[in-house]
Amino acid sequence: MTTEMPSPDNPFQIGTRGSPLALAQAHETRDRLMAAFDLPAAAFAIRVIKVTGDQILDKPLREIDGKGLFTREIEEALLDGSIDIAVHSTKDMPVQQPDGLVLDTFLPREDVRDAFVSLKYKGLADLPDGAVVGTSSTRRRAQLAARFPNLQVVEFRGNVQTRLKKLEDGVADATFLATAGLRRLRMSDVPYHPISPEDMLPAIAQGAIGIERRTGDDRAGEMLAAIHDGPTGHRLAAERALLAGLDGSCETPIGGLAEIDGDALRLRGEILRHDGSAVFTDDVGGAVADGPQMGRAMAARLLERAGPGFF
Image (cartoon, rainbow, N blue to C red; front, side, top):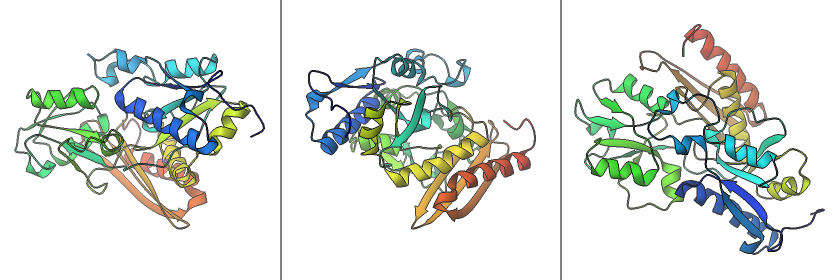
């Protein structure tokens, strides 16, 4: 390092949302930095910042105006110097960062799969006609509508604990969570069953922790470089290029997954109408280094096949 290390007298400020999962991700980031630089926990401070998406819980996300519902306030704190880095679930991140910020650090990716969660049933195929499924994800809604049109879908928001309570109260027969979140929270007692990507393509960047910093902050840049996971970065470069080419957000019905095998990268993509009435998919392979180009090309093909005004 060429710059001064954090210390208990001058701790490194880590910004995050306040949910149990967000805090677990912030602690994982802190622990990796501690190990990389042999620093004590007191050399770091985790700052909880309330974001719009966590404060408005009585509306579907698609009805709340504006992008960056889970990032804006944290990015403002990063820009004004209140925090040194921001820890995010990358699937919540817009594809472009505000001027002055960069998202170029990713921790090793967790399980990418969606998880089917129910107190009564073991999988989607076990749900009877008319069963109620709760989800706030437009992607999962559209995928359900396309494959299981006889199910009822209701709005379901909140953290893991809130959604489990809703299942207990009979608000729905089943819901979905990200397997990565359940694993990071060590919630082995939750009755969940991972869903193969062949059956439900996950959200872009699902399972990946992204860390944002100020452009030109050499200390943060050097520290984060020590914990960045290269393969995860390559995978997300392809997936986020696909998302950018589709002009999508976390509230657009888009699925995507890049996987690496040696020097080869496989990219799968899917776009859906909100009601599930039309689905277009693509699947390509190429060199890892060509991932962003593959993502952009896939987006163009999908949009051409779908036609104008698809979403």
